[in-house]
Image (cartoon, rainbow, N blue to C red):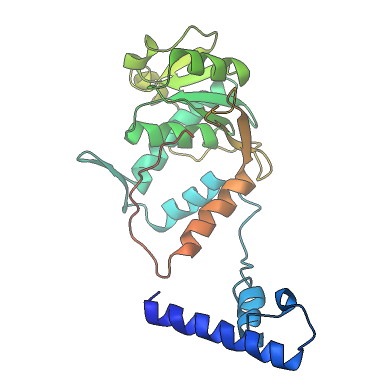
Length: 254
């Protein structure tokens, strides 16, 4: 907003106030309006007319699968010179999902994921969701005490990670799936190319994320697929024109 536009707005507010004084000289000045009727309409009605139809009956990974059908050969993710198309990412995530399903992962199963930023991180997140589970992101740079608390508090019984991070994690009782060490077994799943069918619905959990704990112990926040779909669609709607790529700067943890 330019200074000229700002000055004109302030001038308009002052004019509206003076008109109110003339029309109601006995009223307390604090009760007189600063906004014109048109400005009130814009602020209270037009700018709040944000209702949008969202596919709130679907899980986030189902929307991803729909995109795979539309653009299988388009690049879905790029990291340090490596890339995966939508089809390749979906295939790898399916392989992991079928493997996790064979280990008992289903709707609302909390699965820890401690993976460095990489394409494998995307495979891990999608694989957990496709299996019907909900992921609990664990930053490998976090202090051991914090990681131990999160693993215990979330009662994580299965942990997806990378071989080099296994020894860096605190002691825990969860079964470990290593995306690099175990990939030969994971990729041998007979239904690797099929999207798995799980019992998860839009009302089931997508992930559990922990707060920073700056005011005490970290608190786990449970997020459903419906919540995640809503926020994802809102980000898309935020931009005035379609975008072909996004730069992922934020962490998958808090």
